Image 1 (cartoon, rainbow, N blue to C red):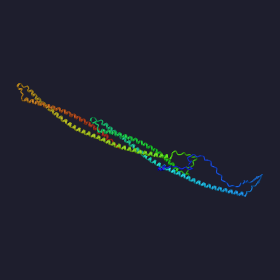
Image 2: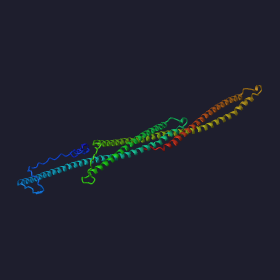
Image 3: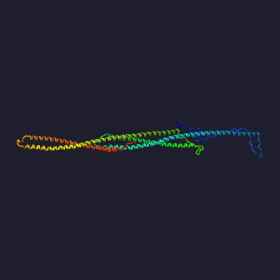
Image 4: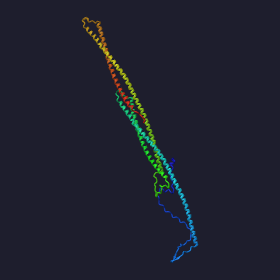
Length: 453
């Protein structure tokens, strides 16, 4: 086909077509025809009947037989010469007519052959442009669909980004020791960065897709105009091919001057090839753009799913750790409360013992004080005094030990109460953390669904 397109189509100019594109010039005057020779004949004086001489009638002179024979021979010779010349003229006319018929038929066949080739070229390139126009239509639909998918993904990824940012803001409400930089916080910040990066990449891909859609629309616009031109040209060429010499639309146009067509066949073919190459290039760019956009959608969906799953795993692990720590603290708190109650009972028992020891000590000291009132030699250091002194000493030591035990018990009770309060505070913090992470954060994150769109 390329060889067919590359073949040079030139109609050879003949003597009948070389001046077709030129303005007609006035025809030169025809040269005078040479006089045909006539046979020599004796001159015969003209005979004038009814000659009048001096008013009287004079009869014409008699014709000499030699003159008659010469005149007869001259007439025969003239007739024979005219007949021969006429026969030659008829033969020349027949030859000229046959030659012009052959030449006219040859030129008409050549023109019709060139018209058929031109119609073939136009049909071929029109079919090629039709194919590329159909491809451009499909590419425009594919690009429009891809742009809608990218725009939808760009819009729908906004909700996960807002949820991640809101989760970070909620977790900032943790207080005390619970406001820790854990893996869940790092995972949430990485998720926010990944979502922002994916949305930026989707925005860039959307801009590229819309730009390629405009290029495809422009190429399709030029293909439409080229198809319209080629369709009109095919119609004109078909009407031209259908004309016949005897058809009513045909007729000789006097003084017809037609300027040469401004576009050569090479320029026309180069324009068609250039438009076809542009359509092929736009199709390749469309395939690349849609392929990159499809890969981006799949990659973003896969990465965001993995990131979402990882963040949820970190949050769930943190919730489990917090719940486990809260459970341990609650068990320990129960033990501390139980121990505090028992320690309070022990303190009460020690204080009761202290109170019970105060009576015997007072009795023994009163007895010693009372026995000091014995007179003179009656104040002996007898066994009673020794026993009372021993009892007082023992009771004082016992009371001192009980007081010391009471002080130790009170101090331990204070520590237990402080530990209980600290445990309760920590339990409350972990309960608040569980409320933030498990109830608020995870409830928000359960509304996030990542899809490839």
